Image 1 (tube, rainbow, N blue to C red):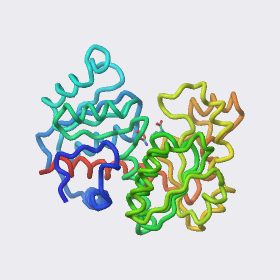
Image 2: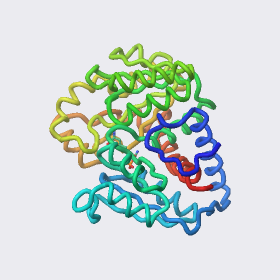
Image 3: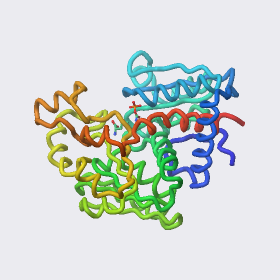
Image 4: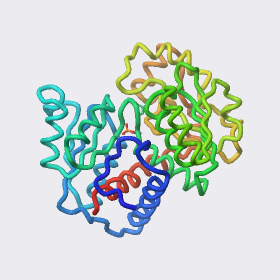
Length: 329
Ligand code: CP
Ligand code: NVA
């Protein structure tokens, strides 16, 4: 398997074998880290982390992965660089490509990360756009594999906003890995027909099943993995909260829903999550709408089926695998 110099813009570009290879590599790197074995094979290399949106996990995972691999990482945040204001993405890409050996981008538009990849000439990794969140899905797949032993045939039920980065990318990941995927949401929040058809095509060759449904009973039945994401994503207007809550409250992941999944089902969430009143936005939503948990209740989030912190840790190991695979010759 050779992924040297490849970009990671969406998992649509990767074969099931390549994804499996990245997961195996992530597991190896995780094991090495736990044993204290050094993996500083990229000493002397430098990468840049471009963030137009906030981040805890993705930024820290890229930074720690870079340091563990012996590299230096430069962080450029939402303010402070010329990108997009005084300088085009195309020019920025060509400048950064002369200085750095790899580029991570998190921001608003998938086209931006595609443009960076096209003009920089160095491996470019998508750290979240409005459309896709591929590094998150690798962590999710590794977490499922760790808890369930395998991926093929595992049923993943996703509740919530299924037409944004997480819904789209989970459907792609499930299709690639031969999983059963049910996205459960009001029709207006389903992935586009174009992406769904692409995933169904992939599914035809991997044995995956892709179902979009408004029917909660159908989606939760026999689910091995229950997943959700925030109802309003970064970059969306605050004004959409009211409508989104109305649309998605019936699809909240709570104990009653979890009880209908398989007895040994696990709960995943990419995080950050609104499950109590310990956040500024959670508190604001509570004051306006009177809800103390949104996409997931505190009981499920803190419950024994929740593996969200294993999942968060796996961001590090999977991102390290992506950097390693695309940068080590
Ligand atoms: N899951 C995820 O991408 O988290 P951050 O926004 O903290 O990077
Ligand atoms: N859908 C969320 C994912 C955060 C990791 C967002 O885009 O804000």
